[in-house]
Length: 419
Image (cartoon, rainbow, N blue to C red; front, top):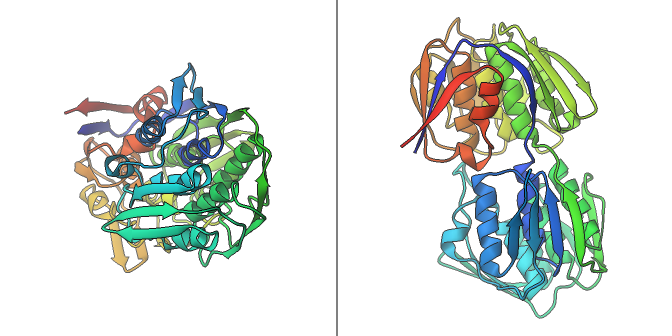
C-alpha cells in the first residue's frame, strides 16, 4: 500500500521530460514474440504493467536484459511457450494482446481473461471474432481461453467499435497469416502507429495505421531491430492538468503535442496559456480557471477517456460549470465520490457529470480505486488547501514512472509512505 501525502498550495515551475508511453510499450513487448528476433527497445518506462509484461515474456522463454536509461533488450530467438498462467494474465488488462502474438508464433495460445482496472464492461468479443475469422479455433471455459489454428489466413475484418486491443491483436496475428488482412474501423491511436513502425522494423508489410483501415500482407523476417518508444500522452496530460490546478508554468519535452491536442485545447479554453513546438509543450496557469465548453470522451482523435478524470480534477475550482459526457466506460466516474471529500461540487446523471467550480478545496483522506482516478486525486490535491492523503494499492505505479519525483522537481510538496 502506498500513501501519497500531498500538501497543496505550491505552484509548479520548471521542465520535465515525459516518460515513455505505457500504451505503446505493452503491445510492442507482445509483438516481440511474433518473430524470433532480437529487439532493442528505447525509452521503456519502469512501470508495474511493464514489469508484468516482462514477466510474461520471460515465462514464455524470452531473454530480457535491462540496460541503462530505459533501454531494454528482448531476445525471442529461443523456442517459445504458448501458455500464460492465470496469475500473470491477471496483472493487467492488455495482457490479452499476447493471444494474437502467440497464435502468430506458435499456432496456439492458452490464456485466461485479463485483469487491470475495473472501469466497466470491456468485452474481448471483438478480439475473438476477428481471430476466428482468420482461422483460429477458440474455446472459452471458466474464464480460460484455449486458442489453436492449423494456419491463419488473411481476412477482411470490420470492427463495429475502434477497439485498440482488437486492432493490435489482429495486426500481430496477421503477420503470420497467409494472404492479406484488412482491418476496417481500426483504432487510430498513436500507439497503433508505433506498433506498425515496430512491426515494419521486423520486416512485416503493414500500412494504414493512423487511419481507419489497416492492411497487413505478411512478413520478410529480420533478425534484429532497434525501436524508440514515443512519450506518454496521458502522462503529459496529467502533468499539464497538475499545472492547471496548482498554477505555475512548466515545460514538457519528449512528447508530441498533437497526441494530446484535445486536452491542451480544453486547458486553453479554461484559461491556460499553451505554447507548442516540435516535441515540447509549455503550459502556464494562474490557477484561476474558467469552465470550458462541453467535454465528450471519444475514441482517438477525440478527447481520451483516460484524461477525463485528470481534466475533471483540474477544473474543480474553475469558475462556472463544466459539463462532461463519458461515452467509453460506464465506471469511469469512480473518482467522483473521493473528489467530493475535498469539497468538490460534482453531480452525476448516468454518463453526464456537471462540475460546478468551488472557491476552495480542503485536504482529506482519499482512496484510489483505479490508475487514472488515483492520478486525478493527486492533481486535485495540488490545488487544495492543507494536506491530502491518497491511499493507493499500487494503481498509480501501473502507469506512472516516478511521478512523485517529477512533481517534486517541479515544486510540489508531496511524498510517498510505503505501508
